[in-house]
Image (cartoon, rainbow over all chains, first blue to last red; front, side, top):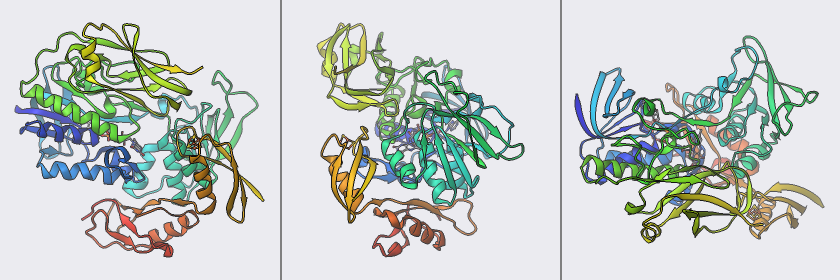
Length: 422
Length: 118
Ligand SMILES: Cc1cc2nc3c(=O)[nH]c(=O)nc-3n(C[C@H](O)[C@H](O)[C@H](O)COP(=O)(O)OP(=O)(O)OC[C@H]3O[C@@H](n4cnc5c(N)ncnc54)[C@H](O)[C@@H]3O)c2cc1C
Ligand code: SF4
């Protein structure tokens, strides 16, 4: 069994940033395992621009953003192995992987960074009735076909769900000569960015049908059309509002879920709110030596924050592997207060905070004139700056300085909440 | 006088703007919450521009080459630009930033590669 100090599972932006940080923190013996044939993760297929504004101050495309990290990894000569699928991780950090060239391999790692990203919710999770005809894809699968494999899944398209990937694909398919007939959204608002709604739908006259859903699909071998209907406040279809739209392709853009089979196998506790691991301020999970970052931890919408979070996880994993971390003692819980869902980190060692903590979460609803507040044991200790608007589609973040924890050494519960101006 | 409805993308508020237009110039705007909305409407009416990203097929390769306009081009040139990109011929190897279509549609802007391919 091969010994590795820091083993990183996944070679997307999260894994790359973690590996770079681990090396910079002094770890020579590290290894990235990636199941695809090259590094870069999901960014390889995101050929649109809009990445890196926070991190690099310029708007890059996905492949360009990924390449900056790949170049850095090459410069540091970081060891990596592509075409290698990790099959199992045990609680004592034995990692089993398989690849066509190396066969079955086992590694004993001192520390592990989980950076497996997320996957799209499949059709089965949605319960759309109808035949299993071809022509129904997740938006990300279609994106992969068009941008990486160079073929078009169809000609006449309906998109279900108005998440950013669906919106981006509406424009992408239009650019390839397809007719995108509608983008259908169950909720009364889109979870996508305003910029994407304007520049991917409005620019090309593609209607966004809010409060609508697909109730039936027609076609046996190949999709022939979909029936959509308006939904009421209970999100159930309203009889009599059905309309039929002929199309040969239905793209589903209905959300992402962190990919955590390996985490579960390793005994990592998952949060029902994020579907990702429960972590503390150092991105450590409940299993000693196992850290998590990026989309496997919680679904991000800005890759810039993925890089930032993952660098911290890599650095902490390095310190653990090098024996530089002391037992942190018990952690106190971070609770979701009003309007807050899935706050990360979920635990904090209040007496040991030595770097700013960025709390990240999704607002439960659309709120106007709102700010993020932090309470320690029910007492307000921090008021963030006011925001004109917050919505579930955009991750909200608030950075808290270590001094705040130093000033309150006996805190036993932290609450992150929203305050809406009346 | 013509009235156009548009959404400001200056921030996540996404204010719905009602813009009065004459001779391709903005005459007035309502619905904005801050003055960024006025600038957005003025530019959108007078000279709307967009970044364009797409792919070029490379003979003998499975993976196409992804490309972008080096800067935003006039919005009414998007489809002409895509047409030019489709016809482009790529000489390998290519590095990020290499010009794939120079001066696309006489906009003065190049289409450049956004990945390395060798
Ligand atoms: C379609 C789409 C569009 C997006 N658009 C934008 C945008 O416009 N702007 C922006 O800032 N962000 C955008 N994002 C978000 C950003 O791309 C992600 O936040 C970022 O890629 C997440 O990085 P990651 O490394 O956590 O995950 P990923 O990029 O998914 O990387 C995870 C890697 O782990 C590998 N892996 C998984 N399981 C295993 C295993 N068992 N063994 C070995 N390897 C494994 C995968 O193959 C993959 O390469 C978009 C995301 C998606 C999905
Ligand atoms: S007008 Fe101002 S507040 Fe409204 S969307 Fe534009 S930038 Fe935001």
